Image (tube, rainbow, N blue to C red; front, side):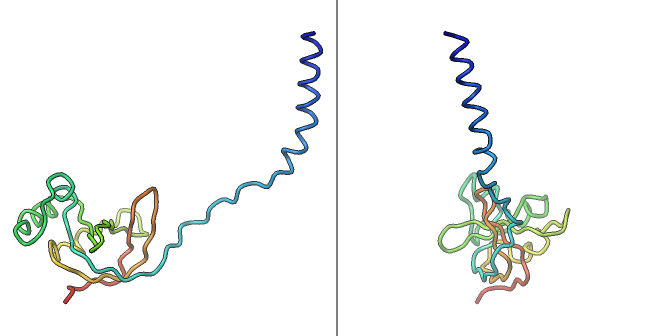
Length: 130
């Protein structure tokens, strides 16, 4: 009985192998090209905003000190979405571009990508928002 069961399983596996080989391979996702976008939002320091909810004019001095110490800055849009600034170049930190605008409203153009649950923006232009 055991020999018959093993033989049937082996025969089934041999017959199924060509069928499995015919299945289309899943497409390998191309590099996330992203979409051009214009974003208006507030430059926040990620640490104080996420741990204490601190932001705004009263937090500007603290946020500037944190940014100079290396704490990441991000852009908080009106709908509450945070966008992390990134670069396509390795080891190209973006804090220096955002530091002059810490805790202020900015208008940014760039390439938006969504990767691993995180919104990122590769900044092309940045200016104070009016």
